[in-house]
Image (cartoon, rainbow, N blue to C red; front, side, top):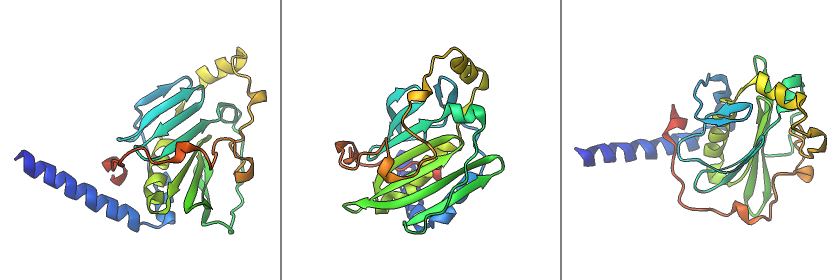
Length: 212
């Protein structure tokens, strides 16, 4: 019986991976329209859902380094822009592989996929006053986009905690160089294309949650 269950699980994962790869980028972005109420990772001023198979490699205030067994994801949460409800109008860039604005009710952002070098692609997604950047192989773009979307759309902020941090002057955002709304690769503060951080770590573990 145990062998049968394992076999069914493997078939499900293999089929799921195939379906994910068949999706267009526009179809993947539609996942922002689904409601996410799951959270399993708790930070000062916010919480979010970390998909199965991923782990936190490093964490500082409003910055996370996440890994999925193969790639490194850089998450930045802009608490100041959230608290001040800063708005942003994204201009589509037709010169790159994929570029689109996101608007879901009061939430906004953008998704970009661009070739950087050595057949590597930079996936950059901003949504809900947070941003994820990750460099991937072309075959893994779809899955990485789904993982990033799953995280970003699940973020829930704690207004009182963030307000208290700012009021107490605990955070000095005036010295923060990273601009979440700046999608220019030339001014990118997170991603260093030549960094060894973007070498595969180990065999990737498919996340069945992304198929739901």
